Length: 502
Image 1 (cartoon, rainbow, N blue to C red):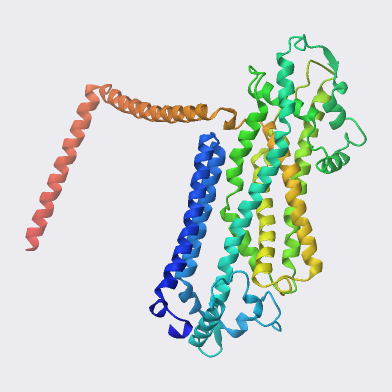
Image 2 (spheres, rainbow, N blue to C red):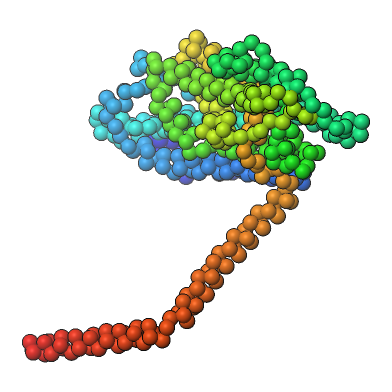
């Protein structure tokens, strides 16, 4: 191993101690920061955000485990050899480009001699392979892959946090609508007997039902498509959807703080979005596989989250339009405020949760695109062959920024309010202490049900045994005695035959 670089046996101890001190110091700073942030969220009773922070810690732990595996099995991976012909298939760059250039000495090469050490290690591993074969993955390539996984996870967490931060900022602007409704309910002059009004006089119906092409199936979808780009949720939309939710799920509490509930539900969903699920890691493997020179795979892949985001925004806007159509088509006039009827039938496959899964995929794929760009730029340089032509780079960056802005300021606020129009409500409708009480009550009830069921079965067996008539019990006893006598006679015959053979 000496030809691959200087080992710890001949490395100055002050160098080892200094490097370890810096690494440990950075790790402790990050750990203390996350710990203090968690205590702050707990103090402010932000349980959903605290759980999201725990999810981030899990992702960091997973990254640490991946890093450990790559480090421990680095030597084993370098000893795996493949044929030269197989190593020349599906390359990210054409073979004319030098495999090792000056770009490898980049932002990530912190320590002196780091690049030369890796190159020497590659020469060593290459010499270990027989003639006509090369290492499956060199030390430098393994090191770069390690950095890419780390950059991907960091960019995904940052982008998700920015999306939730900007989206929540817009949703908080709706708080003034909630306050105006509460003030109106408390004003005795406003709280009068509801009057009979024509349906088409309501602002919600005028903006969502009346107008050119809104009654048409095709043009209705077109209108929903363009609606997501400007004033996706208006004051009339908020007031109507809020009242529909309250009248369906908590009719007895007309002063219910719908805005507070919506924010708690969004914070609870954030912990699901910030994680990297197993199917997202499959996407990473697929994208890395398709990064072949001349295919421009990353340019075409950039359109997947773009199309999905437009489809999700259009669907959410169309759900609001469907609610308006139901009321307008069933009623000519209503007494009091307009009330819509939430239902899962308005969502894909009658499951509002699908929207959250799609938003999760959109944010991750967009994060992957941006992380790949930053990684190539810092690791190999902007003019690297892996980066691709400028004509393909600029559209990808524009699409990535557009997805981030549209998802933050339009799609996420739409998701926060429209997904409450399902047939059921989320547990965020209760305060935190009530949620804990309900969970404890449910566990106790389940435990009592199991114990009661076991007791009933035991009593049933005892009663059935007591209810047997004496005649049946004598018959069972007789059959048992007969069986025992037959077994004894059989054993005797078997013993006689055995001794007879002797």
